[in-house]
Length: 262
Ligand SMILES: Nc1ncnc2c1ncn2[C@@H]1O[C@H](COP(=O)(O)OP(=O)(O)OP(=O)(O)O)[C@@H](O)[C@H]1O
Image 1: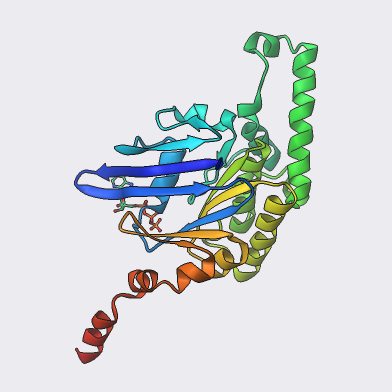
Image 2: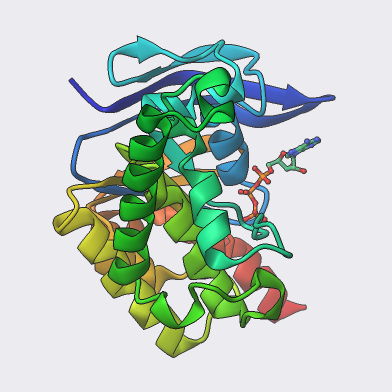
């Protein structure tokens, strides 16, 4: 059984079909990447899986459970975490505090227990702290642990977003354009983080990304979309050499010739 099964997923905004009958499976332990030109529907698929958007058709099954109609707050406790294209951290809190918030979905104590800080709450608190410290060490964030997000370089913030997702100990991590805005060196570091999270932590990763160098280095399989519809699915090499993908990215050869003639 696949960890995530997306079937015939569709959504329209006004008259525009942003996602139009998309199906794919993400297997446990793989890095699966969605690519496509701007406006292809990639982020919309993430927003459908995270349950921010309600699909007009199709289904999403995660770990054997139909999540198609679930609320967004019901998703994280099942084991799905995500990062956002435009970083969504608490600017005036520290890295540590942001990661502790990322543990929220894992809380098992009642608010009354929390209020009186009972032994079980103290044990829980320790458990959360330990996990967060592990993530800080894993992603080399120790120098920034007690720094406010607002004062951190962009590249570090991107990694803190990933760390916050990791802190919730997900089975599936959704990375929305993790390399956007990063330098070549930072992108290469990201390659190593993704490989380590996948291989060392056994994490399954679903990613949307434009940087084909990153995509090629980390992805087991790639789904190419255009205008909300699937174009090709396979290894990074298979997808990039698919004529339909080349056409969607570069335009039809006839268009190019017309351009040259003009
Ligand atoms: N909330 C919304 N309201 C109206 N239209 C939307 C909304 N979200 C997405 N769309 C439209 O859906 C289509 C797909 O957008 P989406 O952001 O998913 O593309 P994308 O592949 O992620 O693009 P990019 O690479 O630029 O992020 C676009 O035509 C977009 O304008």
